[in-house]
Structure formats: structure tokens, C-alpha cells
Image (cartoon, rainbow, N blue to C red; front, top):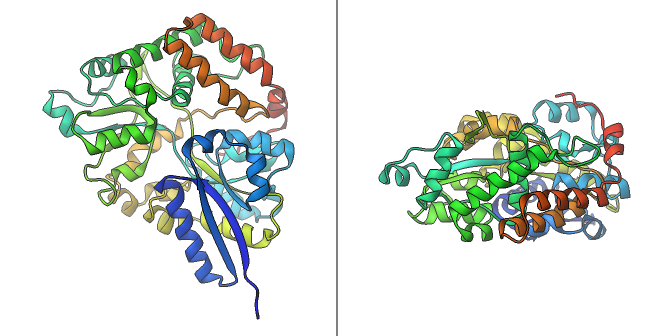
Length: 395
């Protein structure tokens, strides 16, 4: 009698994160009756903050956020996939990357995850609501602020999202964060970026600071009170008539200072714990999920947001999402890649509180900038190692 190999996986608790993993596990089990994969969920906040070291001890398969890759590499938590998967398969993953998604899981010369999910903040609109109030979709920051002051903007201003938006606004001010050795970003860019963020939050009202991207999209799709979200991590689910009653129109970002905003890459990758006892099955399943055929077909059909470029250009996938994929792909291609140095997750866990204190009026912009830099300095050990050890991307 043949024994069944059981793999345990952990992902995040939204239809985009859970349903496609369950569907791929079910299909894989049908093709491989000797393997069973059990997927469990954690919250969206835990996805960003929870210790991957603890998770890697309990689960074989992990859907992870790329900034944790430096920690995983430093502590040997995940399998180095490039030492196990065929080179031709990994080259295809590089060539089919959505923006920098694939290379976000490459660190210190190794590939620690497969980019099975791609996302960055994009815009979302209810053109019918905007038209009813005499507005078009905004093209500039000034038009966005005017729309917000008329209470038509559902801004996702949760603390962690505001930190990501601060990175975006720093870039717009002419300085990419974390490229200098002595501070995150020059104050001539960091302080005006904070003030711009404050301007938007004040125009939208305090309720926005309790709202994550999912909450913003639910507001837009479930009522006629709001007409626009300027930049929140994209969810193709809300472009699907099968998912929501009122579908959203997704697109690019507004211009500020004469140039389009560049948002901060998100998405998720599939990693394998170094403690996994069934590595052959885990590797084969990971390759199955990340394959072009599954990403373009089953994965996306089940509500997933693939990391495989051909899936974003597929006619059927765009038909069922009101062209979510084609309309937002340029924004993904321009997205900013966050640091992955060991310790960055600690920074990302604490820095949103500094930004929130600024937005609540407890400290001024210059003090917030100084606190963010002091926090980074306390945890940035390994950032220079990342620069020296990371391979040159081939895409």
C-alpha cells in the first residue's frame, strides 16, 4: 500500500491569496495521488509582520513577502531553489517576470522563492460615480487633492501603506530610498514627501488611516459614496463581475512634479522551508504553481494575481477582470523594489508608527525623518552585504 506524502502550506487570508493555492493543490493531488497539500491562512497584517523563522519550522510551503528574503537567507530558513530547479525553468521565470517581481526573491546569489503573485499600488475608479459628480479620473496630484476635498477619494491610509507611499513620494522628489549609506533618503526629498502624504491624508479625513487596500476597494465596490482610490495594492478580484457587484476600473498613477508616481512593489512568492522533509514533492508542486500554463490558466481563473507575464497579457484574463492586467502592467514594470537586507523587516514593523505619529500631529516632518533614519541605522546591518552579494539581474 502506497503512503501519501502530506505537505503543509501557509498563505494569507484573502481570496487572492488562499483560493488559487487550494485550487492548485487540489489539481496537483489529482495528478499526483500520492501527494496531499494542506493550505492554511494568516491575516494580511501577519503576512507583512509575522516571523518567518517560526513559520518555516511549522510549514513546508510558505507564501511570503519579498522583504523577508534577506532574513531567510541569513538564517538558512528556505531552500535555495536555484540549486534544485532546472536552469531553463528559472530563466523562463526571469524572462516572464512582472516588473522586478522575480528578482525580488533573488538574494546573495540564490533564488529563495518563485514570484507566483505580483502587485503594486495602482489606481481604481468608479467612473460612473465620478461622472455623476462632474469629475473625470484625475491625472495630476492637484486634481487628486481637489477630488479628495470633495469626499470622493477612498484612500488606503493604514500605517504600513503610508510608509510604502512615503517611499513612492521620496522617489517623486528625486531620491530613491535606501541607496545612501548614511541615511534612508536626503531630507530635501524625505521631508517634502512626508508633507505631501500629510496633505492627502488631511484632504481625505481621519477615517482613511484605518483603511487598508481591501477596505478601500470594498468601499468603492459596495457603495456609491466614493469614486476613486489613488494608489493601493492592486486586487484583480475587484475587476471581476463574478466577485463584486460593481466592478472597478484599474489603471496607472497620477503625475506629481511633472512625472508619474512610481509605487512600491508588493506581491508574494512561494518558498520552501529548509526543514521540509518532502523536498522532491514540494519542489515539483512549486514548479507546477509557477509554470506559465498554471499561472495563465487555473491560478488566475481561481482569483489569483499571477507573477507570470504572459498571464497579464492573456486575452481571457483581461476579459474577466475589465482589463485589470493590461491597464496596470506598466505601473508594475516601473515599481520600486524595497530593501531585503537582514533587519529590514524590523524596520518595516516599526517605521509605520513613526509615520503615523507625524500624520497625527505628534511630531513634525523633520523629526519624523530623523526618527526614520535613526531606526534604519539601528537595524541596517547587512545592507552593504546585500549590495555586494546580490547578483546582477538579467531582466
